[in-house]
Image 1 (cartoon, rainbow over the protein chains, first blue to last red):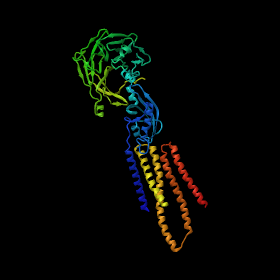
Image 2: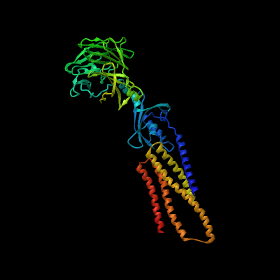
Image 3: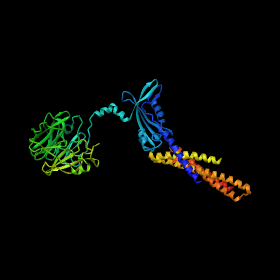
Image 4: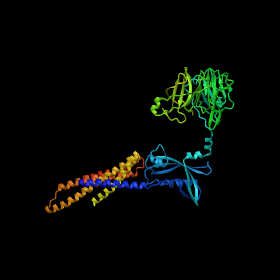
Length: 417
Length: 149
């Protein structure tokens, strides 16, 4: 009796393995036919009718017990079929719903589907192009995703070639700052309670070389204080000494290029750094100084000039700093000589990460007689904390020796809708 | 004849149940489709019930056949017949019928559950439940008829 039971159990296991092997062999033999190359015959060149007929025949291959569950469907229906005529040759867009035999990730991937709110129901989209391949025979020559087709359309190409302007919300961490809305540049001295319009400021200050507008003005490229408010256009200074009541424009250098600009107000005058030359993809900068904001004199630069600056800042007592990538130079004699300043690594961060992510001085400012430098990660930065790029804040008492203070988050304002 | 019937049932249900259990397991564990896999696994378990019954009946009938052969030879020799033993056999037959009937119900319900697995889940299990309910009704009717006689 016991022997018979054991034999039956063994027989059951053998049957199970037999069926498992049979199923696997059948499933293994399944091969999905690619869409491109599918043929259909028809005497009339009717894109819609042909596509419907092909769709039905094509999806039949995924039905039945011999199809593995990462391909098997129970039904496929067309929700919408449209002949697209944006390009030279017509394409057919098919929107469809597929009911799968098993709701799993693999079938979604294999059949390029997207989920719906119904279980086992997925939606799909494809754009196909038919080509006549013989007498009354048509072949699918191309299969695209709708977005791929859209990219090819003339409307999209035109839109892509038109520079886009990004819009940003107001900086809320500063009482005195600028704000741009609907193509108008404003300044505020009370944290956004009142705004003063900068006449023609948007066109003059924000216009970029490619015709779009830069609405995120970099730090050190503007000054908003009650005593002196200034923006740099590509070749002049737009300023006000009376909280935006009267605006004046002072031409600095006629041959300037639209690139980064920097402005600082010191006890010795106003310093503006502009791009004065452009060659082989690099901008070359020159600093100009004015005490009366009418006549501007060039500040001495190194022989080759400053190329591709990331920051230029002059302290209240007249020391000038130029940052280019990870190098920082300082002049204490109005450009007569320059001293290389070394910014030490943030040891805590370096030991934690195994490398120093901070290598580019992005902005500098003075507060209560202390000079601060914000060092970012440059264009290749990917060290993120709480979803924001991290930056390092350094301070210096003497303007020469800097020490790491803390890690801060990139404070770029949120984009506005 | 009955022995052959149960042997055939055992072989068929072993194959079907094995297939369902493998398929259900693959859907459940490999494709991580919990609901779909579980439905097929339940179908496999229901058919497995019939397999177990089939195996059990085959073995019992086999043994009964052997013992009957032996009993016939003894009765022929001593001319003995016991009424009590006949009643016991009759009662055991009713219970056996009930178990076989419900097992067959489970087996068919398992196959129905598998075949209707793409239906909405409630309808799917209702279809299997109807089959199982029908088997239960047959069992109740059989008990009533047997107790009446």
